[in-house]
Amino acid sequence: MDEPFSVSVMQSNQSQPLRLKPGEPIPGLRCDHQDGWLDVQLIMLNGETLSPLLPLGSDAAYVWVPKNGWSSLKRAWLQASGTITDVNELESTYVHGAVMPFTHWLRPDEFRAVAEYRNVIAIWRDPIDRYVSACRSHLNQLTTKSINARLTLHANGDQSLFARTRAAYDSMFKSFGIQSLDDNVDPRDLMNDVALCLPAWTRSFLEWTHHTLPQTSFLGKDPSLYTTVLGMHQIGELITQWQNASGQYIQPKAENVSKDYTNDLFRHLSRDDLRPEALEALERFYACDRNFLEQAQKQLGLLRI
Image (cartoon, rainbow, N blue to C red; front, side, top):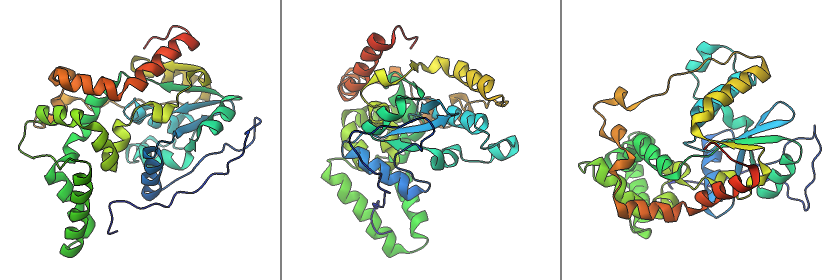
């Protein structure tokens, strides 16, 4: 691979208007490998909404959003759906890759058709908290050291290939007016700097893109299609509901917390580290997510977000 990414997404059949009946196959794009996942992100970067839906039985579904409890809920879905029942296997399974073959990436008309006969749920998260969470776990991927390490692994000893891919990344960053982050700068400063140019980072670095795209890129813009939208603090309740409905025992998994990374300064980033100008930039970027919640409150009733 001489370029940062390639395009090879399977195309879905489009028809207007789309009508579905219970029991009919769920439409949407499908991808079960890394290239396909990156291609999905490229479609979303072109302004299209793609809602990643996991079916729950014959009449329900869950739309996952990166950084909105997706690791815990994907792990729970694998157990509730009976896809993985051996807990030992689950511990060694990369849950994001494991659910990808079962995910249906729905365009708005497809999502609307599916929502006609399925009760669809999703998790909404405060966008500033979501950004900080993305920085805690993934901001270090934007540093020069991390990018070079990734490209070195890809080049597998081919220095010419490393030089070409590094030049391709540098050219792409330059076109957006950014550059890889200085390894020696305080992570708090890096988090603020990235916030000020988040649209550029979201468009230029696909390993970062899905963690920071607005939630509406995944949820869509019409909350009325959802049966309910829950807050992060309700994830435990949701998993319990899945367990009761499926009859499958769902073994919880303790989440990683900052105290487990005492030597990793990125893991200790917090909302309080954001400066006023960074907060203002983030609120502008994520205004669509705030509007989604406002509309959801009106259309779905009082939500405990």
